[in-house]
Image (cartoon, rainbow, N blue to C red):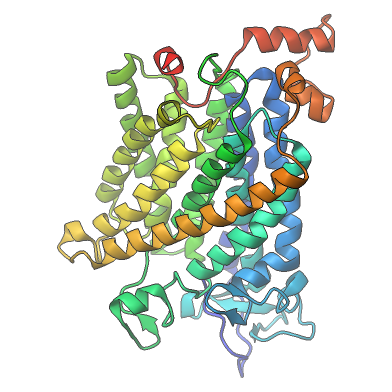
Length: 479
């Protein structure tokens, strides 16, 4: 993910128009994923909570977009490394020296006067500001994913403050550690180098995280679990069935996520080339297999293959293939996706067994499938994979990097969540939770029933359209 930022060139290079156009499209696709997530999550909630659920995604877009421009890019990819944990937030504060040729440019300036980066040292140049914009969309979708764990009950103001603090304290450092040449990358001074040695300034065995298994999904998944534990359960959790109120909305959201994910995965190659083409096919193959894996588990366990299960299988497959998409064969991607769909379908029921209220199954889908995708990359990679006869080194490194990322995110998220609980508070009142968070937090309702007053509409909807995340059966609710 981290490009090669070369010293000032004697002859200014030209921006590659094909790679630049490709990356503009991919950045737009990844940005579309967050409104798609809003639809997916919104359909999963109860009708009285749909607007708040969608607003949590849109609010994340607003906050993350601002903080990433100001200090997020600099903390992730700035020029001065601080202990392998983060980059100096002031090096490129406000995209200084990135968006124009103002004083402070330390990298290459292209023939048109714009700062450029060399894509993986391959003499393919794109504007650095475009790379920053692409990375901005990753920060947005990552923190938005967490919101599904605390649906129906969290103050919107506390959520917005959490977004800013979590990105700064958790996401930007982990992005730097994995993609920016830090401790969890393949750099000379990294965990990988300490474990397996280095040569020519790079680790002999480098972690595989093509598009964000650790940075995005493991990170968001464990943060969602911690937040669900700190915020607490919804009223009636485990006693009242809380089914999705709008399944077509869920499926539309899943479709938009799948569409946008091609920018997420293929765009992480930063160029329109053969690897990006393989990534596209692998992403499709794994997702298709994950749908079948999820539906098979549903059919065997519950007797029915559901629409929500198919949509959830889409997301599970996309999550799992994200870290591995550039390292697997298409057949390996089918295996990875099928296992991901089955594992995630089984994992969504864990919240009832262990009593944590992860409302929309961020843990079951993103954490579980993210962990499997990261470890599975070590098993199924065509170069270095255990199942291809290349030993256990890559798999062991994948496990170590995943666990380190998980622990860092869990501890820091817990500290942030507890601090906000003690100051701003997380929960809306019980009365507002019963009547509906949309009315309490936004003075709106998602549906106008025509001729029925707003308060009456909320009452009707809340009593007739209960919801739950993913595919929870009545037996699971009773358990």
